[in-house]
Image (cartoon, rainbow, N blue to C red):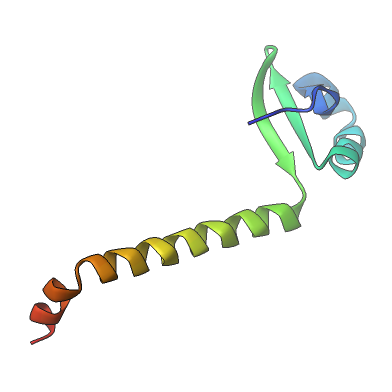
Length: 80
């Protein structure tokens, strides 16, 4: 994952000034909160989180289709 260095903020600063975190998310699409100078939390817009969830569901559907196609004979036997 690539992190925009402009979107980094310390946990102390995020605690003191959450509106700055929100502004970073608005400007950069995300904000990374550092704890002890290590990336610890990722803040994203709610709509982006929903898109990620949909992508995961689509991936599951694609995997399911592939497994069904690959094992069709076994499924047909089980149905009988």
